Image (cartoon, rainbow, N blue to C red; front, top):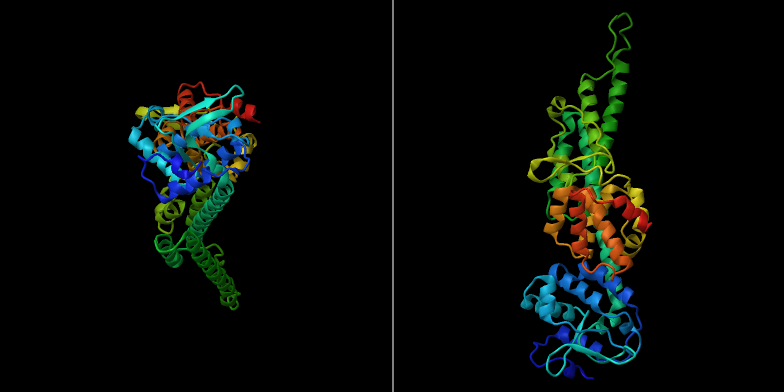
Length: 430
């Protein structure tokens, strides 16, 4: 069937719509499995800019398309009206129409319109569709390899940005700690580091390289000054044999340095800030002044899976240790093997899981306000663990969870009621 017969006359045709219709009209469709199509499309969604309602619509269509329709000789068509999609997504029909057009122009779907514009599928006795009009996933089968390459490139870029961001944070803190030990004479290095971090014209990689060079410059100068201080007392004491005074080998500021080093060391052992701007926070703490002498060293916080207090609704503290009882990062890493394999993410530490949570939020089609509300109610660690469990289940069996976002919100509600047994879910996945 030609592309002109597949697109109704009432549609506004664009170059992307015609390209998808051309792919759908070809008879040599590659033989792919529905599971592969679903995984690749969900991985490439962030790279293609698919989020919000568009992602929700795509997720619904992937759930409705039949597994057998991807076999050779069949056509993966979904016959669902825009009005029904609007009811499922709680959006208007015009919004759904725009979302479908975006998916068509991206090469994921194609319009396969009937003469009347209705969408329907008539199946024979063997279950094969004799007549199928609706939304066709055939373009995804042709573009699957390109989508997979694009998803891999997006993951590599995300990892590179995360590594550069960690390097900026690491060198910023290293410079702050070095200046705190060396004294006010090295305050200029803090100022220069702050200028580098706040420079909007530099990328993360450039900031990391500049901070690396600045830290090595400060370390070399500190080492040279330290050697000079060691040699200087030996020369001055050569003629003072009869003097009864003892040379002071401890620097006058050693007590304040010990306090500053203690605070700095304990800051490194804490879990990272939820804001993700640790490099700016480290430079804004004014480490080289006298403010740390008035602070008391903070005890180390408990591990995420241990007892922890969190402020719930109404400002009342709410204990969350029951929800994370028996949950460790090693258990999450073992349970979410498919998630790590398919997305390329590495869940080896709690901070790494929290950093990956935003990408997993897009993967399951959860909005940013809903995720922020979950963090506000139950804390970042529990929210990140729950979103990893939902993503793992959705990737293992896309048809098992019809609405991953709703599943996640239900887990948060059960956690608020103290009925969430996250450790049992994780052991079940293992």
